[in-house]
Amino acid sequence: MAYIYNVQSAGDRGLASKINALADASGKITDISLSPEIPASYVVFKQGSLYYYRNGTTGITSTGNADASTIIQAALDALTAGRTWKEKVALKGTFDLSSQIELRDYTFLDLSVAKLVVEAGIQMIT
Image (tube, rainbow, N blue to C red; front, side):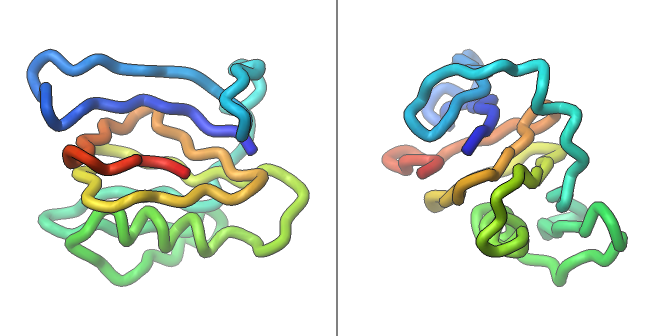
């Protein structure tokens, strides 16, 4: 499992620290140069007051949802079940996370053009 963290703490919106790292499930930093080459299976974005995810192959867009955490998890859950290859979900824009997001094996969560604002007390990614 590999993913990029680019996180902003909600408790310090103006001066938040950012963390950018590609890590495996144990937290060990891996080669960041390999991950951007994976095409996005889904892209998550906000339009108006709702969040959506769009299939990177078919272009089909999900039904909108006001909760960013719910739509991000739905995009992650839509990836191929039981896969043994990496698939990527890319987030674009600003996302206010109100609940935990679960990443499964062989998942790359691309936050390179995303800003995550996490509510206090939320363990963001498991």
